[in-house]
Image 1: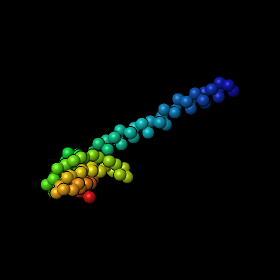
Image 2 (image 1 turned 180 degrees about the horizontal axis):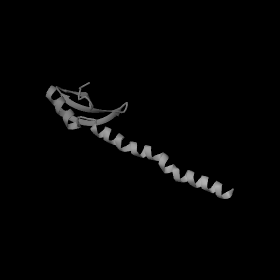
Image 3 (image 1 turned 135 degrees about the vertical axis):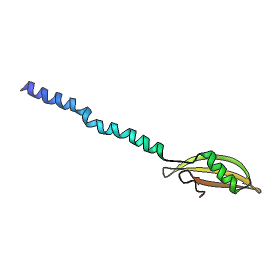
Image 4 (image 1 turned 135 degrees about the horizontal axis):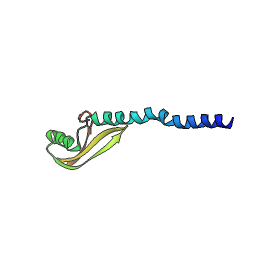
Length: 94
C-alpha cells in the first residue's frame, strides 16, 4: 500500500510542470502583442504640439491615465502657460 501511494504522489508531482506549461507559453505572446502596439514617442508628441503653437516648450512628460500613456506638454505662449495632452496611442491632441 505504501508503494502504491508513493507512486501516485510521485506521479502527481512529476505532472505539475506539464500543468504550468501553457501559462509559461502564453507569456511570450503577451510580450509580442505589447511590442506590436504602436505608440508615438514623447518627442513626436512635442513636435505635433509645436506645429500648432508657436511657443516655448517648458516641460514634457508621460503619465499613465487609466493604464493608457498620455504625454503632457507645457508650453509658454503669449504670456501664459498652456498644458497639452497627447494620447500616445492615437497621437491625438486632447
